[in-house]
Picture 1 (cartoon, rainbow, N blue to C red):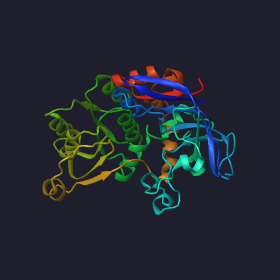
Picture 2: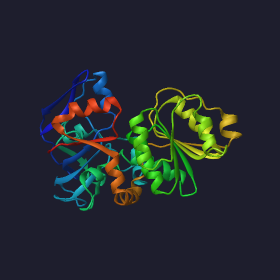
Picture 3: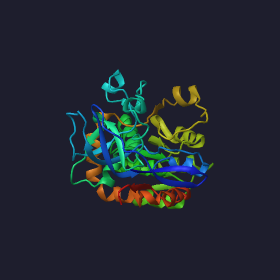
Picture 4: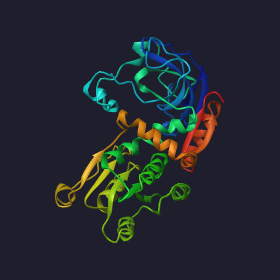
Length: 338
């Protein structure tokens, strides 16, 4: 099979690799749509990598001993290799599993765990059914395109009476605009990139504010001085975290989705006790929410086509990563068999 790799600073390569094999209930999937996520950061930095990608949609070609899937099934591939037996996995919160399976040891090969390749291997319970009327590209948005913000909005119970602030309108934040608008919420965005700010408006954001010292006041002005009901950070920046906390109303909720390695100052008394905020960390959605994610995809098809701003063949991954590095894109999808 063919797969994407990073071989140096801003240097991608598509190389041959052995095809993965099914084992027990781990099925082999032919990858037909593979969205790009944070891999471009490694491309820019020159971090060599042999196996890349964690989201996909495709067709089962070998079901092994599985009774859940069979060859020909259209599926969405969920990320990671959780144990499937612990309390978190059984409750649907597999993304937080503390007992991840060593896939290479289990299958006997290091290949098959990456989605930026023509084939992958996955436990059958992480292969979710994709209806025939949903395209591969739209279906692949059930992972990072819509998933992280869906989980956050679900936990905050966002609905039609709410105003939601979304900081960081990259692919995940733009997916958040779609999720929030589908729920009937009013959306205010924060973004510096002009291309992404305009795409957010096209997706239904009422206003997009530029980040900076006056951003919090602009959000307050847009909410008659009250603040937003809920805030959702997809930027992964300390300044964005503080903006969410400062621009959210008393007794409001703030969810952090964007990864951040720096320390955000949270003041217990003024932020949590006196203001009464609820802070939430959200990585993905509970597996039991997939039906509602799929409903969102089916209802918001034209919006999903705006979220998927570019598609490339696998062999064009160099151009795809170069585009992502500019920021002038939303979700980019590779087609491994194009």
